[in-house]
Image (tube, rainbow, N blue to C red; front, top):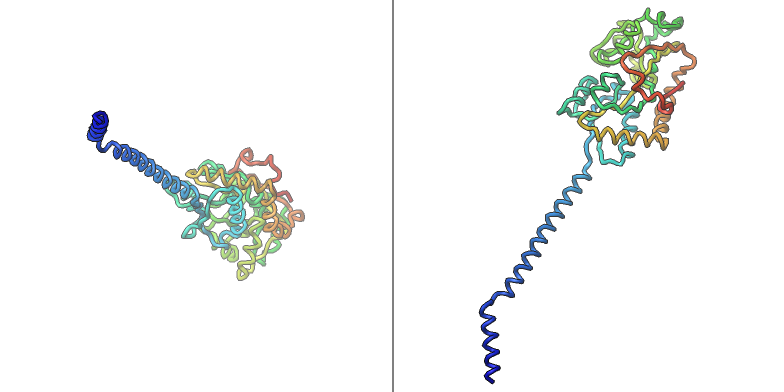
Amino acid sequence: MKLLRLLILLWITCCCLNPAGGSDAVNKLNGAGSTAGSNASGNTSSNTSSNTSSNTNKLIRYPRLSVQLDPHSDYVLEILKLAIKTSGQPYQLQASEAPMQQARGIYELSSAQGNVDILWTMSTDEREAQLIPIRIPIDKGLIGWRIALLTAANANIFKDVKNLKDLAAFTAGQELDWPDVPILKSNGLPVKTSASYEPLFTMLKAGRFDYFPRSVFEVQVELDSRPVQQLVIDKHIALYYPSALYFFVSPREPKMAEDIQNGLEEMIKNGSFEKIFQRYQQASIKNANLKSRTIISLRNPLLSPEKMPLNRPELWFKP
């Protein structure tokens, strides 16, 4: 009996020495669990935010032009949209709010805070040094094949033109900031210029210059959209100089340039690039009837041949 009382006394004493021990242990466990839960919740939130950010479509901003100012824009945009899709990257195209002249677009592309990320234009060494060129000719070099718009009264002025010397007797018209101006002048051909594109047609009609050389894939659209000018397409000669219409990307966006190039390369491999090219350009090429014309070749001092992918025949048009 004395032994039993002693054991009970010892048990009461131990409980008094640590009355909240069990509670402390539970609290510590709950605290750890709460911290872990908080961290897990934070990580989940962070991961969700990261996933949302990575899946958000990055804008590709390009200069907006009217169809009249850029008659091949539908073709180029279809190529660009499919290149983006084929790249597998989450980009979204957005046209600029206001229309831009070519020079303004290049300025915005090269500026550190510019509001244009990509444009398409005829390549020059200067542009390739200033911007990121994607050296896949969107037009397969058609921009270097030129046919003249003429007034109806001068429809046959090139009938007896056989070479560059003969052509030098006539004056061409071009927009002031186009690369064509120094190309034509460097080959000894007289040129009159306009500060903007649209007045060139009225200047031609008024006899301010003799002919308006346009690329094979531009000339018919331009003629059809201006019936009031009563212009015609020359049937006798074609000018040719090595050139290419490239996509140019801002130096701010090297990854964008790489992605678009990858998309274009895949399109060339799977044949989708050629299908779009033929769908848009086959009629223009046929109507140009280049094989029946006198071809006058010009030097292009603005673009070094070694920079062009001339070793890839699949990229170039040959009549």
